[in-house]
Amino acid sequence: MKRISNKQKEIRRKLNKVYSQISYERGHYCEGCGRTEGDVPLSHSHIIPRSRRSDLICVKDNIQYLCLSIGERKGCHEKWESRNKDQLLCYHKNLEYILQEDTEYYFLITELNA
Image (cartoon, rainbow, N blue to C red):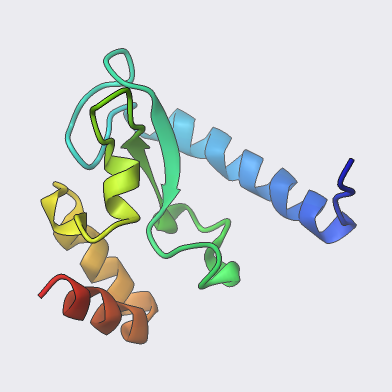
């Protein structure tokens, strides 16, 4: 069994608290397509990936609800992590956030989708 460091446990604890706050404060719908939680399973998705900006892992503004893939249907969470980002309703809002927080990543994304 893989051991989890104390630092990672603390991050998980903080992140679970943020997820709980988001659940209380926001509507339960996919920000990428508008489908509701009763229609599709939702997931917390980081706008700027955790691997890129560890300082934004627990920042609510960097987390959104996106739907998961089911069978043949490709979910918005998967689209956000691919080159199909521009198909999502939240694409332009996310780009504004990314430009504000990580200019280098903004230009990387916009060049890939050009």
